[in-house]
Image (cartoon, rainbow, N blue to C red; front, side, top):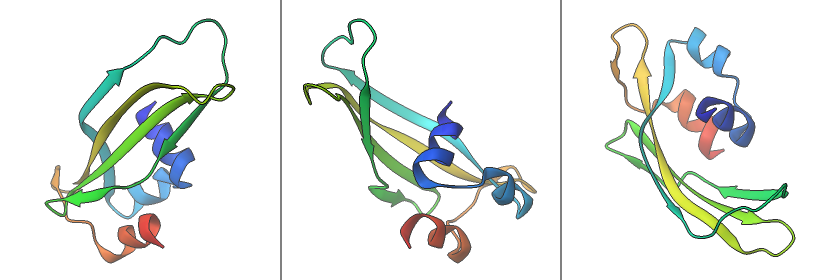
Length: 103
């Protein structure tokens, strides 16, 4: 589901990215549950790329709000590490990938 989040939020084609030899893995996460989500609710998720840590990890904070009340239910950050599929090791954010997130 974290990868689906990347695809939908940033309009990425992860198959295309894997064909050029890269993948993203959720390497760290933190979440603060501030209030429960009771019943069926429509939620808004606000997110963006906050920073690139050590040139290999995208730091993406998020806020989950009730659409009707705008009250925040949860907030946190997910760190996605860029992996070179040939080596299996973290890879720096190259120009091609940088364009996907910052242009």
